[in-house]
Length: 165
Image 1 (spheres, rainbow, N blue to C red):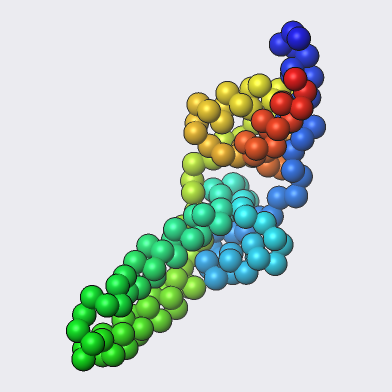
Image 2 (cartoon, rainbow, N blue to C red; image 1 turned 90 degrees about the vertical axis):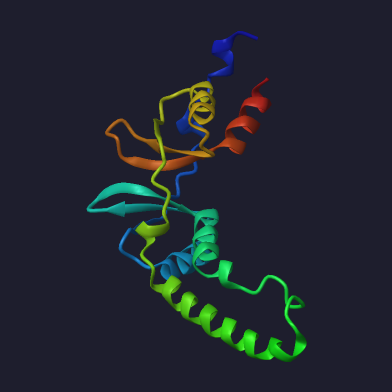
């Protein structure tokens, strides 16, 4: 099979075309609710009408953990039982305070600014090379005017290529 036969499908042929956007000034709480409501694991973040980054469910979780989760008690048996109740109440107050701060944190503080675009006319082989070179799991797909029209992920790219072999 010749290489050009492998590339008969373009990026645009397999792009997931539903892109959910959110402004970078929105809160992390709103981002989590939007991902849950739309049943997506990634939001395209915009600022002043331009793409500013991505917020994946992983980015959102990591931001939560860094801000809140790292304050959760790690070992409830580490302290003496007599002091455990007081420590748990103190930790609980810290966690509640940090959780409220996280809810109000702006998306721009937790988004990933590392993203790449690829034209919908590009071949799947080009997409594979771009993903590997940049170590990104997904690429934003653009039309001929440079407007983002969708997302292309690694799994869909490779399973499509494998189906063509």
